[in-house]
Image (tube, rainbow, N blue to C red):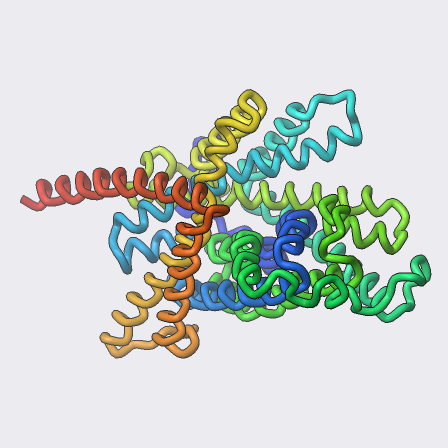
Length: 460
């Protein structure tokens, strides 16, 4: 490590990198593979679930954008929660967010390793997992440009793949796809029990399945802090969220439920793969595997970056060990990167040594974190905006129809969380998340209380 240290995080992310990072946060491996489970749960009406979830994410991103444009910060919503609600809230939500991403890192590494192991079966899966993690760790340790460049190309591949899928699917729907003349039209939207075969209740259940696919959209507000003119980039990314949700999710899911039966057991192989195989596209499985591998590497890369920046922000506020505030000469918080990587390696080790036991329980603790983060963002924006208006000031980038729409968003999130608590399918992971949150809260009161006491002693 260089003996010369920077005083601030680097501002090395270019416009094209930040633009692609904002797209990458929306597109995860869940779209390519996990959407099959969502479709099987709800049927063609999953389109309504995705639309409802997309509106919720759009509103949350607008609120976060309002705060981030005024105060770009690598701690993003954790920093805003500290200011708007209290240091205990910033501590709790910051560590919950870090916990979420350091558990995502091994999940994605293992998923990528399994794909590579299927190609090269003589090499153990765990070696691929370690290799992926080491490569992406080095890129994050080098400088923020390395992370940005990796993410740019990862995102570009995902975007091209989805656009190609929509074009191929569109051709098939209109009956002009040359490789499968027998597949056309949109009859599958209503031919297997109707558009809403399991009733409206499953549409709400579909929201719970889909909401976690969108988690990651907020990464751009963290990454933009390491670029020039972060406020402008956050404003632009927030405005484009609605178009990206419509293109990448609604259009691609529409193609899937139009071309194949929602209740076909083969859909479990992966929604994109099943559709392309039905259209007789040569090497469909290989092509989708390449895209999924790219998606999991992208998600892991972003997870490591995001976890390290949140760890750094917590350290700057005294909520994590002060050594994590040390920056390299290129402005990279290397201690925070290494700490997050080690936590990821620990999760990976637990997964391979205790398959289906310890790691599954740890992963269940992240079940409701996305909703808790969204709730904290909404409450923080409500309080910060109200305080600003009392001072006679107005933010440069505003949440729509404030405060009514903010209150509505809070109410919707609260209802969804309440439903998760009473639903047998989601109750265990919701309570697991509540347990971890309670632990974080206890530590937050201990740490912030001690800091307050020390501050009082100094002033005396």
